[in-house]
Each structure stands twice: as C-alpha cells, then as structure tokens.
Length: 328
Image 1 (cartoon, one colour):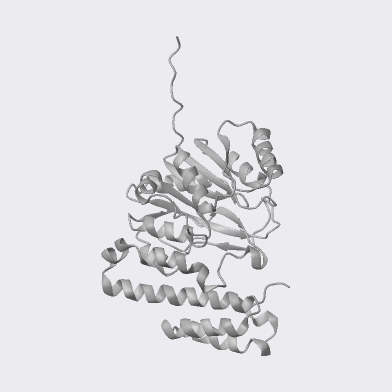
Image 2 (tube, rainbow, N blue to C red; image 1 turned 30 degrees about the horizontal axis):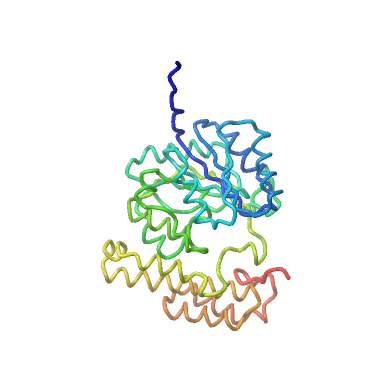
C-alpha cells in the first residue's frame, strides 16, 4: 500500500473576495497566475446570492485548470465573516487579502514576501498601490499612484488616526500574527479592516517594500455607492467603539497619549464624514461636521479648507477640490 504524503503548505495564501458579481474576476486571477513567485494558493471567496454569478466564478477557475485555485462559497456572509473563514481554511505562512475588482502588479508577491522575510519581527509587509479608473484593464495608465508613505516600523499611532492602507491587497500578513490577533470582528460592516490592522499593530511593527513601484492596482470605486467612506456618523461608530474600547490600546499608549490620539481620530472621522456629506449634496450637515473637526483638532490646512468649503457656491467646480460633488 502506498504511503500518503500531505501536500506541502504554500508560502502565501491569497484570499480573493468577490464583493460584486458585476465585476469579472479575470484580471485578478490572471495577475496572480502571472506572478514570478509560484508558491501560493488562491481561495476565491464568493459571498453573493446569485447562482449564475457563482457558476461564472467557478467557470473562471476551471478555465485556468490550476490546482492552486479553489472556490469557497459563503452565501450572504459579510466581508468580515468571509475573510475570517477563508483565513481559517488557508495554509500559507503569509496571507494577502485581495479584492477581485483589483489586480496585483508583476512581481508583487515576491517583493512582499522578501520584505516580510527580511523583518522576522514584523506582523506584515506593505507596498504601494496605483489607483486605476473603474473601467481600467491591466496595462492602462493609472489615474495616480498612491503610496502608503509609511516606513518600516511601528505604525500603531498613524493607523489610529486614520487608515492609510487603500486595500488589503497591498499587505502580506504573517500567519502567526493573524493567529494571535484572531478573526475579523463579525459585527463590523464598515472599518472592519482598519480595526484589524490596528489589532495587528498592537502585536508588532510592519515591514515596508523597498522601491517606488506599486504592488497593487486598485480600481477607483466610482460614485456614491462605490465610495467606502461614511456619510452617516452612526456607520463608523461600531468600528470606533471596537478600536478605542480595546483595553490593550490604553495599556500600550498610556492614558494621556490614548486620549490625545482618540481626539485626533474623532476629529479625522468628523472631517471625512463632513467632506462626504458635502460631496453628496448635504452641504449644511457637512459644514457642521467640518467645523466640529477643526474645533477639536485645528490645523492651518484644515482651517483653509473649511473656509473654502463655506465659499463653494461662489467657486467654479474646478476649484472644489476634495469637496467636488458626486455625479448626479
């Protein structure tokens, strides 16, 4: 009788979440298959409710005939629950949380893996991303490059004030750090990734991918529905409560620093909400939020932007900057 041998665990598990059946997964899958690093597995996580869409995803995997690709069907699960389940089923020593609307840059896995291997104390490695048009395809020019502008080391305080990472696809997480941090919080529908990066940062520093090239191409989420920032203050409240209610945070920072950063984070959230309200046509409510933000954490730049926000009706659209209205 032949002895059965277990398949060796891959170096990286790519957990590819399908958020919207309207977007094909081909660019994401092909970008992974084209990586020069070959030691990986990819779990395509389908959380939709349309049987036709699920069949299309299964067909996309079957066309490629690669045993490293598999489909995990979690009908009706939220992003937090789905990713936690996929993380539990994955086998790689590193984990990358890819959104299937986006795609990896050539050499991204190798660059992230090398950065993480060079920093054994790091919880994860981060690289830059390039922002693409909603309808862009691989090879198109980016709208702009977006680098995290974050160094190697302790990023906890920077992450507490706001989430500088555009998407989990630009991060490679160490399995042991993920095990210690635990799963995503299932009740969070907005900011679940931000809360998780902070929880990881309490465990250790981050490694930075050297060089200026992006590791991820991120499709811009167009319009109101595609924008992930909140317009309702209540929408971000659960994430804020989870972050600042974590007792490990005050123990790490000390009471005085904890309160200072909490005020800055609340001011940043108020600014984001105000900006989004104005872009959504709710100018009075938006200005109220902007004023509260500046009062809580004033800076010269924010004071100037607040003045500009009050003057929007007198300014041409080309000068509306971060307050430009959404189409329609």
